[in-house]
Length: 292
Image (tube, rainbow, N blue to C red):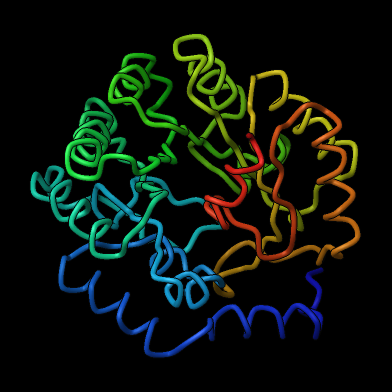
């Protein structure tokens, strides 16, 4: 059985969608449209879209807007992507960062199992272009698992991102139902490889609550991530994008989210964002600041 969304959470979602100003949201939307840049804010129907756009920030979605996997929790289109990576995209993305005046940029992508390198070379081109045209901007990449390819991870790291994030999304028991095509152990291995190859790069991961996990399973995921060397973790409420997606099993209170944040910090995470509307890039500059 799935629960009805509580009134307090419905109000928070509505407020986040409205953001801080209609004109500012339209300005950000128009800029992204003009430059032909998809965002995960739009593609994944993020509840924080209005809030982020009203502050002239967004999480860029590279490698197209069609994912080769079809996770049961995700609103991003899935199927067979049309064509190779867009060679002009790194330049357009850098232009957007300059126009928006960003000091911390988050870049993510669909999963591209159709590409031999999973799109890692394109990630590297994006980071290189940001380094060239936007000196001083902090670069965070939220990558797929690259089908377990160590070479692909190395390609991204060689471009020198400041933060490399990869989400485990949920507990291992629910992977077959919620995250088909992914593998929990493979995701942890990716995070370990990053710390082994580039200890100076901050690693980050995140997962959702409300899919049917138990407290023991949540604690186990946190311990796994801490042991893999993650410095940052995000924990948010799963919200079903449509009736066709996996149903919400429960809505988690602010108090419980606060408890998980404290537990994460107690396990050694340097930064932990935990709350109903927390997402992977939620207030990314602020939570990166907790590391100092």
